[in-house]
Image 1 (cartoon, rainbow, N blue to C red):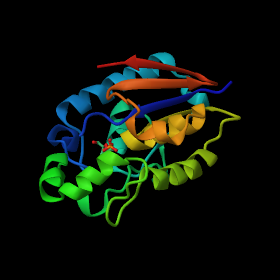
Image 2 (image 1 turned 60 degrees about the vertical axis):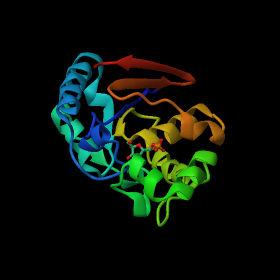
Image 3 (image 1 turned 135 degrees about the vertical axis):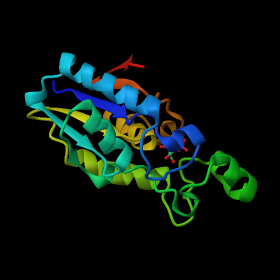
Length: 188
Ligand code: F6P
């Protein structure tokens, strides 16, 4: 059975500031993880028979580059679109748009960012991305984002949609899925 590896990008500048979305680059710790990911890949992955895919965003592409792999890009794997709130911190949203903040807390699955996406929207988009993954002929290594990883893992493992928005996807950890088995290896 073919293996799907999933990793979030290394910690980003936005992660450090608790900012939603953005299209910046990695923090020093994110750079360190990416180099460790390169060692992991060199020691554990049959790179000849593995397809590496990133989103189209700077932080996933930088992670792949520092890990020494040449990925394909798929914009259907881009992070959830926070619309008008892209680039704000969670604290700013809570302070400036309290009713939006509460609405998302109350129903994170269905809540749609103003001019952006909901998790329900993202589940649709990531299903498209999964259709383009070749599960037959090779292993796949996806370097992606928190919300996208939640959706893909739920789809692959057949979890119900209401589990998706709260799923724990730790940074700096390689997630390996083979059939119905999922394992986590923290690298940093
Ligand atoms: O915080 C990093 C991030 O990838 C954001 O860009 C994104 O909006 C968020 O995670 C998704 O997680 P949550 O839905 O829990 O806010």
